[in-house]
Length: 281
Image 1 (tube, helix red, strand yellow):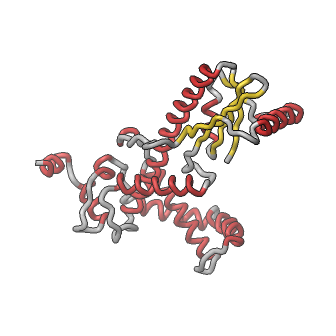
Image 2 (spheres, helix red, strand yellow):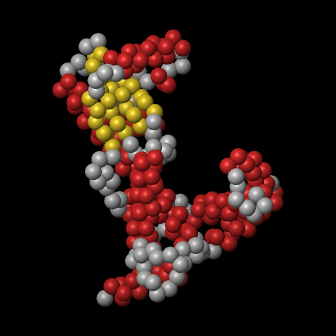
Image 3 (cartoon, one colour):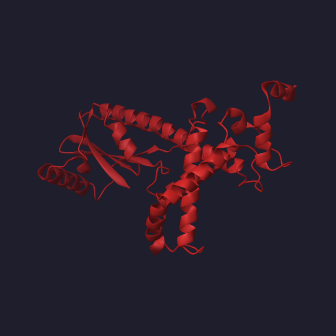
């Protein structure tokens, strides 16, 4: 977990409480934005995997619901294990009183929350990492050492800024952003060729952790070769024949067990607006 320190431009605890509420609002708004981006990604990946037939034997009742469940699991694991990824939404605020001044320390795994808080005019950034000059850096290190030392035998005021109960608002489809079929085809083709080369260098077996970067660099060089470029273009052309624009009717439709999910998606895409109205009658 990373720590970012600020000095409040007030010595009044009532005013400090209002600043804390402002911190909560900014972090909450940014967390919702990040959640929408992550959910968009999960939906996009799951849709493309369904279209190419990777989930024909899986029970997916609705792509939106399945993607939401996948994302919630990633978030839960990241928070439980303290992983330093964008899926870890933990933000904790500690408040200290030192030499008649009020300081707060933000503990988070996500640098983006620190950047958001720089917009609060009543807080002065005293984070150690944000200065280059050694003299000023040493002063800040000493300041925070003294503050933490003062509180070593008793607790400071601590509040969990995020996540709280029911932290995420269910986004409307219109608030989600997806890449175009062309963009997705390029990424999928690159991943497919890269995985093909990684498997080649691993001899078709499991890649040991200590060999991962060696094989990755070899595979990446081959990916960037003329041969790799031709393969990427071939796969991209194949993908563009059936990757759809991600629409609400694809993502929100409830599926059945009557046919493979890629066939059901194909039927949804082939329906005209008149057909959809008929289904509702």
